[in-house]
Length: 310
Image (cartoon, rainbow, N blue to C red; front, side):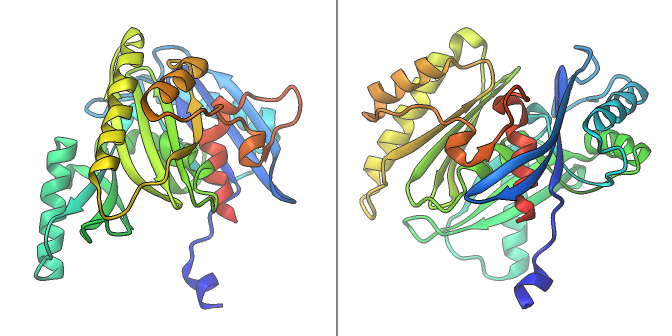
């Protein structure tokens, strides 16, 4: 009962916003997984959403309000008020921060976290909306935190749009945070999420349902193969250097977006980590999408946030 009182109740409906597209889903729980109850997507003008961490994101808020209203209407969810939202990946920053040594007090810990956050994100913390998740200690027993941030002025743009739609948005996270939920599903091995966007890709390594490595890579499409190869070599070398506990091999691979070719990713995984993996699809992660409905790549982020309702 205490758990039910303390644990926040998230909605089973979520929206994903990206450059050139927006999508929404409403999930229902089914035996052994989840099923798309309602879903819809809409193409947006190329210059309507300009995802960036430093500058304004929305060129015409009124046009975005209209597009999202049409999106809700097409899905039959015009009266839905409670939503979770996946923001564009490039509009946010995320990092795993490690605290070396023990902080003397709570205040000292906050000061260290603020300093590390500012260095990681390149912005003062008083200009950011910060979310933190404490992670299990690493092999050296050092405290670790998953930190996500978005500039207040950028967030205010999106929140003004949500207010115009009379939405109650209790959970606003970057795209990868929704997508990684499909690897945080009780599995005890290691899963790798690779999600692409117009600036490059984000890689999140999940082990025992917790992120252990998070890297944002900015690159052109033709550079993705080389950057992925370097990233996997880094993980392999780091895993072999940790003598305290042998890291389990990556046994799940989730590749989302258009910038990376899934077959090529599987090939690079074989060459660098010696694992033969097929990228997961919706059925593999327990999501049932009705035939002819929206592609998994487009709704993985909002659907991942919607599954937090359970």
